[in-house]
Amino acid sequence: MRTRELTRRSSVRELYAHPLGRDVVESLALQVGRSPKWIDNPLVGSVRLSALPKLTGGRIDDAFVDALVALLRTVPDAPAPSGMPLREAWFKEAVFYQIYPRSFQDSDGDGIGDLRGILSRLDYLKGLGVDALWLSPIYDSPMDDMGYDIRDYRKVLAEFGTLDDFDALVAGLHERGMKLVMDLVVNHTSDEHAWFQEALRDPASPYRDYYFLREGDPGTPPNNWKSFFSGSAWRWFPEAGLWGLHLFSSKQMDLDWENERMRAEIVDMVRWWRDRGVDGFRLDVINYISKAPGLPDGNRLIGELIGWTGMEHYFHGPRLHEHLRQLRAEAFDDPDCVAIGETPGIGPQMGKLMVGDDRGELDMIFNFEHLENPGRTRFDDYRYDLGYLKRYYTRWQAEYGDGYWMSLFFDNHDNPRFVSKVDPRPEHRVAVAKLLATIQFTLRGTPFLYQGQEVGAANQAFTDLAQLRDVESHNLAAELTASGLGPAETFARVLAGTRDHTRVPMAWDAAGGFTTGEPWIAGDGSHAEINVAAQEGDPDSVLEWHRALIALRRSSRALVYGETVVERSPRRVWRYRRVAGEEEFLVALNLSDRPARLRAPGAGWRLERASGPGEGPLAPYEARVWRREPAG
Ligand code: NOJ
Image (cartoon, rainbow, N blue to C red; front, side, top):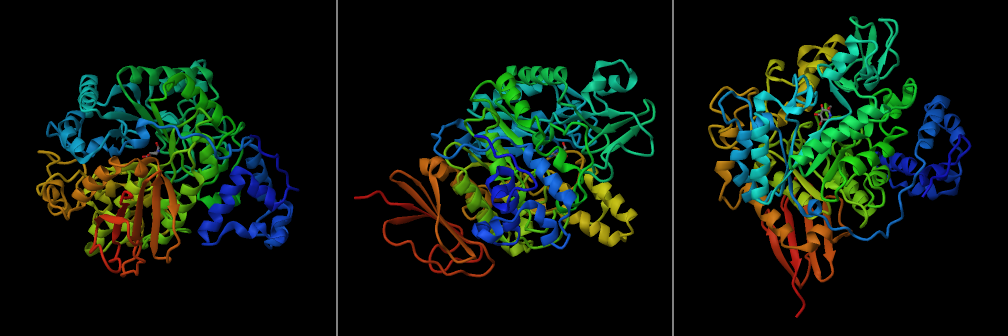
């Protein structure tokens, strides 16, 4: 289906009928806690976009309207209406577990996790009910961004092991009926990658066109785009007299996907890993790979609204779908090879354009809108309101019918622990961790656990910047300090959002169990209490709650493929059913730290699991799951 081409004279109603326009409007409505229904009001719906500057007293300016219209015009396709048949697949039934290799298990005492370490823990993961692993990058890298800066795509970083170790890991997984998904970082490479080095050294090198290298005045970057890791997105290379584009750290140089030869090399490389037995890929910031021709300046207001100037020119670039289709057709040309896109900034409608079964692009995506409350960023210290999560998932579950599939996650290596964001008080940690697990294992979509989540790991009580290792945290601290913020405020802000909360060593036992040496990053000692060994076999533990819910999900088609029917409930309660034919589950969740009244489900329902008393009002953060008794 094609979208209607919008102009400044288009109406707000036409904007809402457009997939990107609809995502923008619904996201704004979600942010302010209102239904987008007001667009049905003829007065509002018929307002022309060109009238917005006047109607908003200039807060929206003409340049914004032009930028918005230009952006909408880069999306010619609309998602297919629902009605596609359900496609069953292993990765829809599977429970995924993300491993941060540097921090999972060290096998040789150097303080750095490695592949042999992971291999030694496969039985634990199998016993938990995990079906597939996603490994954060293990490729050769100078580790400026902990491996998301790849120096050689066909080599394993020596600290992690060798290709033989990798092959042994794949074999170990496959023997156990498990699968392996690799991180694929192809929006950028390290500046130490041979392609980039050649490009810098030799003006006649074909590799010059693999990147965005621009001549110019050393004092003036080619455009106003901002890097996600602070400052301008351009780095000056005096040795070549060139500017280079880096959306992330100054050592992560963006690849220019206009270059056909570069794309072919990426396809070859992916196939090389597939030949080693890899079952799929998680594609790092994959929606950023197509940049607007000419790399125009970003709009000021859009930059302020989303926090990064320039993003409208690459978060959904003009050739994105074409590139994704090429990858699917040439690199992932097997329906069993799963392709999971990391796609910051993509809403439900735009997401459908990437994961629809009719599209031939990706199988599912990771979005991030649910991780922060409206108006908040990762670096704000605040208590997350789960009412927003309910509204968010209700919207996505309703949008994603049989031809679409979504991922379900709360923790990863880029975020603090979600459990701490919801409620940092230790006395609520276990209940919140169980509540979140219940959401992940009973909604429709593929659950992704992140290491440590299964024991309810919480944020770390870091006390000093020197304890942090992440380039993003250090760049931010430098930026805040330069802007005049004092050391205490700077540290507090960095602490709220640092990615190192989830990058500390996995807690295996009271002594840690991660390494016999000095860990590359130290946690705050909470592993002494919160660890795997302490929870194994304890029916009340977060770990056993995970095991039980994974088993429950596996026991029922309804919990995997069933429809999600959200029931009316008070604001603080979330109540939904999962239905597939005769099979049916009912889930009731208390989203607050106070007891909540509950309408009993009535006869015919058997309580399967309760994280609290299981009867009467729901206890703070309690989760209950019932199964409908078979008739007769
Ligand atoms: C997303 C990754 O998850 C993150 O860790 C990394 O810093 C950026 N992409 C850049 O590769």
